[in-house]
Structure formats: C-alpha cells, structure tokens
Amino acid sequence: MNRSDKKINIAIVGLGFGAEFIPIYQNHPNANLYAICQRNKSELDKVGEAFSVEKRYTDYRDLLRDDKIDAVHINTPIHLHAEQSIMGLKAGKHVACTVPMATTVEECKEIVRAQRSSGKNYMMMETTVYSREFLHVKELLQQGKMGKLQFLRAAHHQEMAGWPGYWEGLPPMHYATHCVGPCLALAGKQAEYVSCFGSGTIDEKLIVKYNSSFAVETCHIKLKDSDLSAEISRSLFNTAREYIESFDAYGSKMSYEWQQIENEKPVVFTGEDAERIEIPDYAYLLPEGIRQYTTKGVYDLDENVHLSFKQGSGHGGSHPHLAHEFIMSIVENRDAFPNASQSANWTSVGILAHESAMEGGIRKNLPEY
Image 1 (cartoon, rainbow, N blue to C red):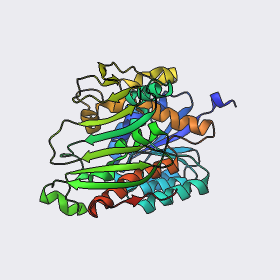
Image 2 (image 1 turned 45 degrees about the vertical axis):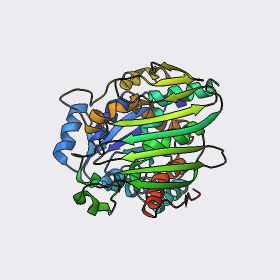
Image 3 (image 1 turned 90 degrees about the vertical axis):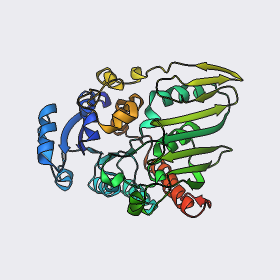
Image 4 (image 1 turned 60 degrees about the horizontal axis):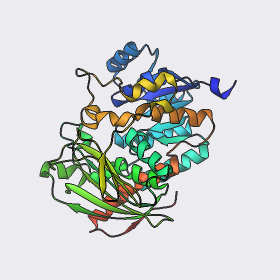
C-alpha cells in the first residue's frame, strides 16, 4: 500500500468540543473515523446517529482494547488528559490530546516517557499554531519580510463563567498554551525559565477550589539557546475584557500586532508606518476534502454553538490543519508538531509560571524533556 492510500483508524474520545472533528476525519483521505466514546450513552448514540458512526464506546478502557483502532483523539476535561494519554500510549495507540497536555510537571514527564517507550506519536492539539493568523505571520517571517525576530507577546483573556465546574477558580496559567504556543513556535525554540506575577483577586467562592486568588497572571519566558524572551498574560474570571486569544511578533523590519477588538483587522508595522491587513485563509494547504472546515464546522450554527466557538471564533480555522498534521505524522512515520517533548515544555511553562506567581515571582527553570 502506498502512503497516499494508507488509512488510519481513529477514535474520538469526548464528544462536546470533540464532535467538531468527526466530519473532518470522515472526509480526510488518510483517515477512517472508526469509533467514538462518551460516558453518557444517550448523548453518545445521538452523536453516533447524527454522523453515522456505528462503533461506540462508553468506557475508554474498552475502546483501548479494540485492536482495530490505530489512534485516539482525546477531548475530555483537563484533569483527565494525562491519565488518558498515558493509557492510550501504553495500549499501543497514537495519541492526540486537546490542551493542556497535563496539570503537573510530573504528568508531563510521564507522558513523554510513555511516548518514547511505546514508539507511538503524541500530539498536543494546540489550535493557535495552526490558526490562519499564525500561519500568515510564520509565512512573513520565513519569507524574510520581518527581518530578525526581536520580541514576542501573547494574551488570552476569557471570562469562564458558565463553563463546567472544574474550570471554576482555575489558576490562569494552568491554561496558558494558547499564549505559549505561538511564541515558542514562531521562534522555533523551547522555554528555558519563567518568572510570573499574579495580580488582582477573584471571588472568594472561586478561590477555594484551587487555592489560587489571582485574577490575572503575567509571565516572562526566557527562550533556550536564544536571545529572545516573550511575555504572556492570562485571565479567566472577574476581569472585564472581550474574549481575546492573541499574539504579537516584533521584527527588525516588520512587526505584527493583533487587533484590539474582534471586528477590527490586525496591524503590520514597517518602521513607523502602520497598515491594517486582511489575513488570508490557508485551506489550500489541506486535502481538498477537508478544506471547507477552515471556515465552517459542527458548531457554526446559531442553534448549535459550543462555548469554545461562541467565545473563540472557531479557533482561526485550525481544526482541519490539526487533524491533518496528526494523521499525516502517522502515515509518514514522523513526529507530529508539537510532539511530546515540545508539548511538555509548552504546558510546563504555565504550570511553573503559576508556581512562580504563588512564590512572589521567583525564577522557575523548565525541566529537560
């Protein structure tokens, strides 16, 4: 069988946000959406019927015993990511997992060990590094138009009221990969150490869950083997701001800044001259069958909107790019981007940043992965 003909049997685990990927895999030339998994059987069957998926599991352990499944794509609550990723790798499955990779540095280490031991692929499905905005700035940088990269900055402000209970009071930096990813990916470097400060206070009822009081956390990242640093900021509760998931990149010849509000266009600076630009779509990079999903998907209808879409604007058309990268990394027998060690580094930035904030901003070194 030629690589171009190879089909990867994939199972999606978690069908809230995860349902968005069902038609993408169903229409990818190298994927076979083989199974879906959710604990609630009525919801499982509802999704299964809607998308004509016959193989259904309510127990993840049963799914992993199915030898026909090559890969799992995990879209479950944050506290389950590490355990389910490790289980998948140990069962001999390739694993893709929504962000963040884990909630502790030790969990990140365990996933990296499990990936290396299994020889299977691991990919953290970080939306920002496959968004059309990121792909455009990456293209400008690669074409030499930006000159030397001088500084990076990212912000993710989101009011999480109304989200599932496990989000309540979550330390802002524990969900930081949407900020960290574009900075480190554009630079092509990993983080070496961080220093972070907390600011403000969230409601008392929110503090008790994670013993974290900060409304905002702001972190500086020193990049390894580089003269670059980056600044990231996060808020989740009690901070007035329209949703924004942004990054800025400053070069010696050209700089890019995200728009202040959603309906504006981003700005590029050439010297002191400024110009608002239209960001092109990058669907042409994808197989024809899934190009449509950079602009529409399961949750783009008013009567069927997932919170991540209502607030997150569809993640910049990234979903088919993510699925394509995961599938093709398996087909081509190569690492996915980001791979296990990169994902661990990006995730650990946020984990250690929060530790730094709790200890008054002291420097925290990133472990080697």
